[in-house]
Image 1 (tube, rainbow, N blue to C red):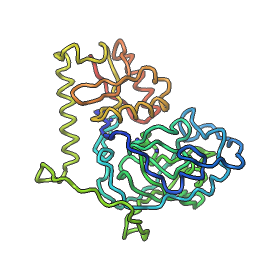
Image 2: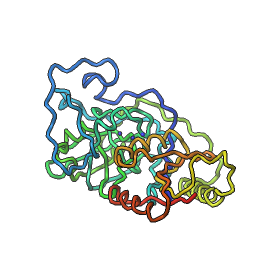
Image 3: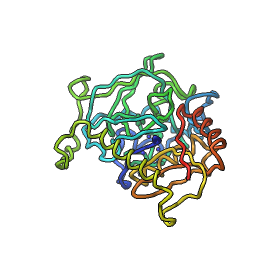
Length: 334
């Protein structure tokens, strides 16, 4: 729902393309995108239990479309994979290598959902997040792709389109749109155990509708593509390390931030993705939102918080981030 670090976050994102229609969610459900009719009646806001898995100060809008139960699941279809959203990245010290093709995948874990705080924010695929669409965020599944999500407690199942990266909490396996969570019965509790299974043609018994031709593949400059994604991640990590080691010798005009100790939350090859992560974390870590800054140098856009006067003060903040997200950021001293 686009929405990284010895603390790298390298998922690049292209300029905002026009929003592709999301199956079953665009026309009759709320009027948020396109010309949609206003629902005839509106539900009262749902009562949400404290301690749920939706994001801090997040939740549904005050007016929920009356026909939300009628929103159909996403319809699997062959789409070109996003050229930027499937790059290797690292979040708070944890390395992720997204799939670059449709592959079998099955996992059981905690699902959470995100709502009005993210509604309209750009996702990793470049589309605005629509809380009434049947979409999801996953750390490594190819973007876009489709998965079946089943609530292990009540047996309800939905099909969603993966359009974003996340969740970046250690105990969660997938982030769902509000509508998907509603149909699974997860809204009131905020989170719940689910089984996530990738929908792959010829393997899951689900047919894909051919609606978009595959993108032509440009010849690679490298003759050997095995391990290429990890090579790119390693090369970028070494580039970042080299730049940080020589930061003291950087011309003053290239420095975007003042001296002190910083906590690095992400590093991107795309400024749009740095902005996207800042918007996402500004909600998840709202107490840090005012100190989040993007430092751009040599084509790398680092999302950092600070400066702090010393390592001890920075470490206190890093520990709070660890408690919230399950991972600790890295330290950068200028």
